[in-house]
Image (cartoon, rainbow, N blue to C red; front, side, top):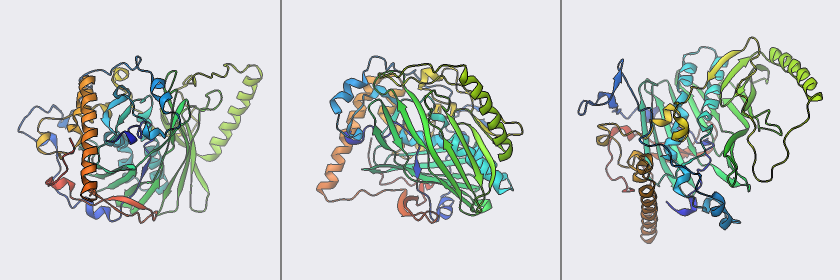
Length: 472
């Protein structure tokens, strides 16, 4: 892993791109699915009511970042591109970026709900809720994931949620992570490639989403595409780190012409808009059919447009009365962007329908990188998995494993060793005039957007892992 790209995924706006041509055919060709609960050779995988249980904490709590000054690093790098800055490992979290993007699947039940609905507008509502829920895990997640090594992979099968996923680091310059997820019963396919573009604005880092995500509901012959909002981490140099998402997300149903337009609002001068998401679903004639609103950190609701407008008008009258009696508080702070006070309640319009509500995090989440229950299990190496996983799977990365176990010195040494090994391999390929060859994804055309994208070529779950690169 080169220093040039060390910080590329510091802010994961989970901006996905890419789709799949012919993916439905490639997906289900591969047969064997790894299911840790069915492996009897060890017998120590805990079960409850027939469902495999996953770990609920990490082996060790996170290392304190208070003793490290980001400014001492950044001040030597003024004028350089952000991607050329190497950050100390203490600012990482013990997950690869391939595992971080897998967190898209935390609320897979929303896709399953969309598959079960007969009405196309109700399906769009469920898809919109899924698109918002996909960024919810970033709330308070200020640690950066490890950059994937070229050729690194990750797989996850969750029978309880009904999906399996495979991802691969397909490019190093620029860094691109491709993923492909599919329903275990053939209901959906979800895929894309991710390569956030970062900008350093002095006190904050902004990640611009690049590319398009594609969701195919196979039963309904529907295809949805969208991209993600911008993500910004504030107070990179001084103060408490905090995250906001902003920008417009357009979800298009290519089969019906329906569209959902969502606005992730920036926090604003006094923080009143922090975390808010507001939008609407329209049909192909541009008639607004319903309004969707809520917070990406909390919940999303749907309501009739007329009811929403009437509610907004009554709220505005109340706000105007308040403002006459209130003085603006808080002066401009040149040192840090103070995080606005979080008001975690959404004003629910009468007649609204709840689309999604975030799950509570583990009680000890703050001591464990603010991980959700889902994130806590992603690097778990269950008994018997070694015999089935590809040797390139990031669960085998020694630097991530060392950090997870609380051994920061070993993690730093292993990280440096892996970076040097990757550089040496790249030089060797250049010397022999060899091109890097991806294994599970190939460049192709997204038939819905017409763009060139990384497409899953199938075969991963056949478990033929010969001739994979030695990256660890």
